[in-house]
Image (cartoon, rainbow, N blue to C red):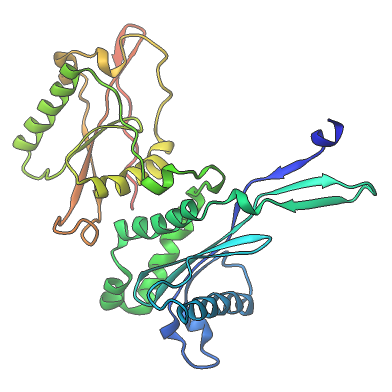
Length: 316
């Protein structure tokens, strides 16, 4: 028991994340041109080139055996590498350090054991694919960016997006839900749900600028007019990036829960509709733009309805 208490465990962590295109630096001495984004950026240039070249060699080698299905992951003692080609010749690579257990040995020196089997390929491959879909949500495809602004603009957008997005990855808590892109729904009785749907229909009828509406209570979905695949991407962004910065603690009990509000109270506590423009032109197929409308409700405090200040609309 004493030995067990001295064990130290470490969760899986992100070691490297990079995007490259092998066609951009085909000649010797031009290898750095292949690299479009690399995290962490503080790494020396030669190390970046070495890691990218190694991944490129692995992909090319596996293609000799299966041209249509190149490598998806590589298992080593200390880490796991995941490969994804979201667009032709554009590769995204995520390197995750395996979780470890540090145990004391008889001579007092720590012994590190790598838990290789703790990482599931399907889970973390889905996380990598989600990284691309999230980038595409706000910036469009890599090819489209290249056509409009060239390599320099693509590098700038990759740096701006992934510098912030990678900080929201919680690799230690990834599970099977990341594979399916699950959505948490808020349970409502039939009448309350119909009132919300009626409100949304009246709003869309009155405001011609609104094309699609999504209604959430904190981080739980109540109603959405988007297609399911599109809603999964948007929901992932809302619950991992936007909402954690603004959601207030849940009330324990009382008349301020959403199911207890009557229809007249819904109208009375409607403070404002906050319009957040999301650049989904390249993501949502034929939909030119999505506007997310958030209904900010009042809270019942000291017997009076007190408004909740809406969050500051940030530049996305």
